[in-house]
Length: 386
Image 1 (cartoon, rainbow, N blue to C red):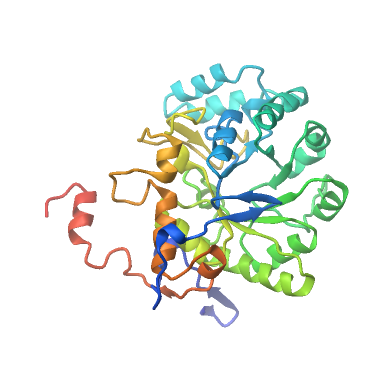
Image 2 (tube, rainbow, N blue to C red):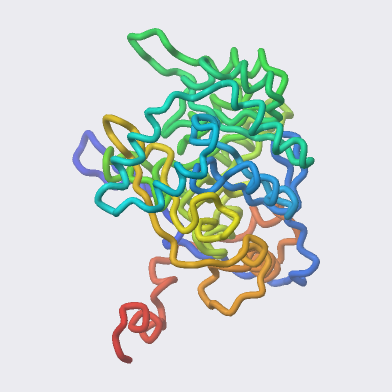
């Protein structure tokens, strides 16, 4: 749907998580019988949940625990774990900083150069525990450290920036070719981030084995406020999923779509899968778990940018184990815990026995979905009496 601003310019309608709802099916499935497994970059996951490459969330030990629980975590290979021999005091300093000084402290800490000799240690720690070593580099980071990461035993490379395209222009000449990269390395390459059909399709044609979808929706990310750039996640996911399906028909190669960011509750994650995602990537939901390296804080990857920070340090007011967060039990009624249980219940109500079936259920545009009949709940959330 387009809305004309004038005779020369139209604005397209785009939908986020709170703008849509899922339609229950005429048949239902026992949640215990729902299959949540998926395959990402040749890795078989029991559950379609990835932890994003944020230093406040994913450490080598956290990546190991995520693997043991049937999920996947991505380590930031340009973060504190590859800049400091002992990252623990650095993480403690970030957590101890006041709110008004946190960004400055992060900028100072990230001025320390990346040390390629640390790659083998952190990736080896993950692999020695039997978990896959999945690491994220920026496009420039790939040019500088990609070879070192591969030599250190990297199993999956995630090329990630705020916006990634296959047709980047730069007067410096320092441009990463996704096609050249995917054809020259012997590990799967996931590429992000994007929000449109065209870019997702071009990345698939360039050889990406997974697409990350989302520009600016994360809780610790301020890209949308700083740049005005982004597309709400339901529309962005549907765009990329359409590209995936068309590319599969053309090539016979299936490229998973991973919705990255903007989800805190099980219902939002369910909507992402129903919109076409094969898996979801989140970061802030894990902050506060004692297994995370900077609990109870986390921060966006662009927060330490020396010129234009596009993130902030965020405090999460919870402290539950990673296992409880994923599988329960829980006493909260918001859908922010037992995330796997939330997905199972949603899919069962919609008659979907697996993720592929879930991607074809009915979804409706419903602006009143989160407010209809919720007067008492909303008053309680605002701290008001009934």
